[in-house]
Image (tube, rainbow, N blue to C red):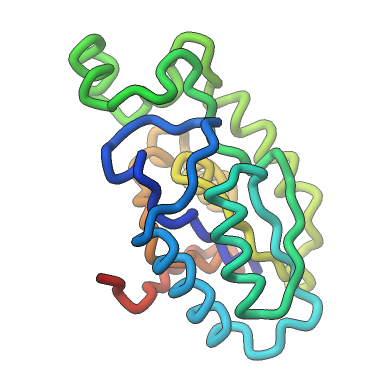
Length: 194
């Protein structure tokens, strides 16, 4: 089983600014969301024996993972393969600015993979697929993965055998956890934060 978390909200998320590999911290709402995910995980995993928490190296994912780790009494492992898609020259820019310059790319959610100097879907799927391939088989698999919006989409698509197009249609909440088990994906919402 995998419990999959996207990091809590950052100022860049609130502004709709592209983060990619930029290291931005959680804002106050994001800290609350991370804590709520930790509480939810504690209810889902009453006995954390044998569980691992693996997170992207970026600060926002590490902060969220630490909230989960505190709730469960588990250490945090870091794996660079869970890092967000790099958006090259677009990182730090507002989505609306780039959309105004490249309206044709924004007709689909595939625009993430068209940034100059950025990463392609295939490159991202290869690194995330390699991470998934190293996990123990179910039912021995007991992993909490903490990553990012696009990373979460690609990971779930690989797990469920979805196409790149379908991957980009998946939602990426910052106040819910996905349970990946037995080939199925289940969204589990946290208590709402103000």
